[in-house]
Image 1: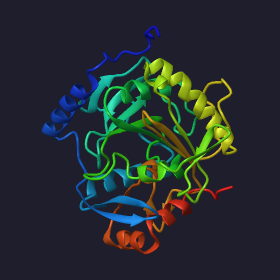
Image 2: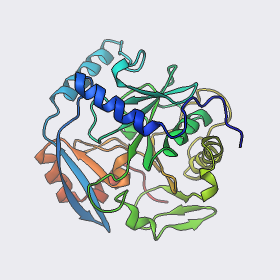
Image 3: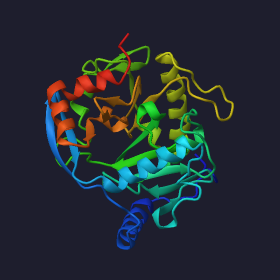
Image 4: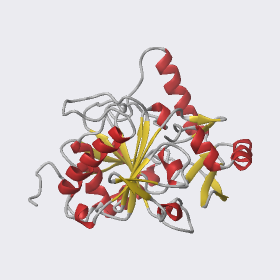
Amino acid sequence: MKRNSAILLKRGTLWKDLIRATNHALGIGALLPVPTDYEFIEDSGVRFFVRIVTGLARKEEDRKKREEEAKSGWQEDPFLPYEKDLFVADISETHVALLNKFNVVEHHLLLVTRKFEDQETLLTRRDFEALWTCLLEYDSLGFYNGGEAAGASQHHKHLQVVPFHLAPEGPPVPIEPLLVAAECTDGFGVIPGFPFLHVFLRLDNDYLESPEGAAEKTFEVYHNMLRHVGMKAPSGGTAERQSGPYCLLVTREWVLLVPRSREFFAGISINSLGYAGALLVRSEEQMNTLRRYGPMTVLKSAALPAT
């Protein structure tokens, strides 16, 4: 397939750019990693990887600042303009790659639209093109928190990419043991171990030929997945608002979409990484809650009932 001029990133350079940007941002204090410890919690056939924050003061200060701005009717957009010292690479004419300033996961990449688009608008082919440009650079998981109730912390549209492995041991994505039993119906799959509404699809190797080709195919998959779970799908217009919150996860091998009902369970915020088997808690009290109820129950409570 002919390379689309909309893609600006030179193939084979993103990982080097990411390492360079990380070292630079750490060196001048622009990147502020959130320190964590971790443990594994086994539940429903998954060895969930759970981080517990050991210091979140800076991010909490930033969150409270945004809340106050929201109350006053004005909220700063951290991506317009974006912080130059967090810049990684120009991905396309529509997207730029930045470091996640308060990162929990090392080498956490944000794919941000150059112009403001709301996080609760449906994804476009250009969004998928930017995502696949990155996914084809190194082994990684792409994800999108579709709205506040899906765990989005910023209103400016941004997809996210984190490198494999998500945990220091085990499979690249903790939920992978459940994917073996995925059952397909009408072209889409369900994961028997997931007791909530979702839709799953394995990708063929021909998706990996080019970012443009993969974007075209997965945009169609995304469209059909949304319809499959009873949600609004893109109609071809611009800036179409989604009909409800959802989490989307994409790898070179599969796609998973989970409609959401709420962000929190007992104060524990759940985003798309939760449905990959990686959770974050802010205190020992929240960790105890997670141990008591079990991660799968927590994920179920934040999703919609299975049909």
